[in-house]
Image 1: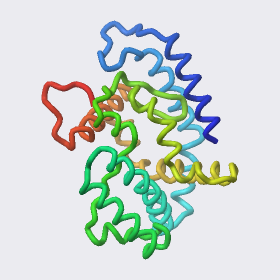
Image 2: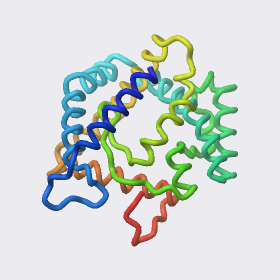
Image 3: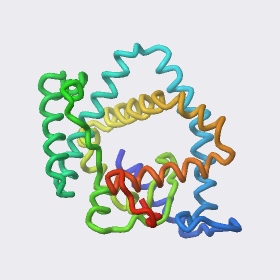
Image 4: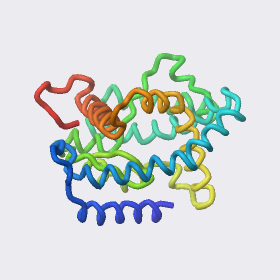
Amino acid sequence: MRTFFYRVLLLAAVLGLQACATVKTPDPRDPFESFNRSVSSFNDGLDKVVIKPAATVYKGVTPNWMRTGVRNFFNNLQDVWSVVNNGLQGRGQDMGDSIGRVMLNTSFGLLGLIDIASDANIERHTTDFGMTLGRWGVGAGPYVVLPLLGPYTLREVGALPVDWSGDLVYQLGDQTTVLEMTGLKLVDYRASLLGAGDVVEGAALDKYSFNRDAYMQRQRNKQYDGNPPEDDTQP
C-alpha cells in the first residue's frame, strides 16, 4: 500500500517539475497553480464518479452510531501518532492529553470505538510530522495538490513518508487488510463532509481558490496555535 502512495508522490513530483505557472497573476503561495488546478480537476472527477457515491451509500445504509464508532476508532489511532509529534514539538500538555486519550479510549472505549476521553473533557490535539517540521523552523513552502491525496504544502509532502510510517493502519502485515481499512477511513471521512461539500459547490465562484485559501489558512492557524502573525502569509 505504501509503495502505491510512494509512486503517486513520485508521479506528482515529476509532473510538478514539468509544470509552470501559466496564470496571469499567480498567488505567491501557489507557483504550481496550473498543475494544481489540473490535479484538482482530476480529483474532483474521481470524487464525483467513485468516492462521493460510495460515501453516500455508506451513509445511507450505515447507522449513525456505527459511523461514529468507525470515526472514533480511526481518531484513536491518529491520537497515537499525535502523542509522538506533540512530544517532538515540545508541547507537554498536548502530549499528556493525547496519552490520556489513547489510554482511556483504548482500554475503556473498546479500542477507541467509544470516545470516553471527550466525554471526560480531555481535548484532542491532532498533529503530524509536517507540523513538527514547522515547529522546528522548516518553512511550509508552496501549495501542492497531489493525485488522489489532495492538498498539501511542500513541507507536508516531504513529511508524508514519516507520517505513513507512524500510521498504525499501515503497520498491519496483510496488505488486503490495509487496503480495506484505508478505503473505509476514506469513505467514512468523505461521508462526514457530504453536507459541507454541497455548501462549497454552491457558494464558491472559484472552488479551487476557495479550497486553497481555506486550507492554507487552516494550516497557518494550526502552526501558530490559532494566533498567526498578521504579516505572515505562510501556514
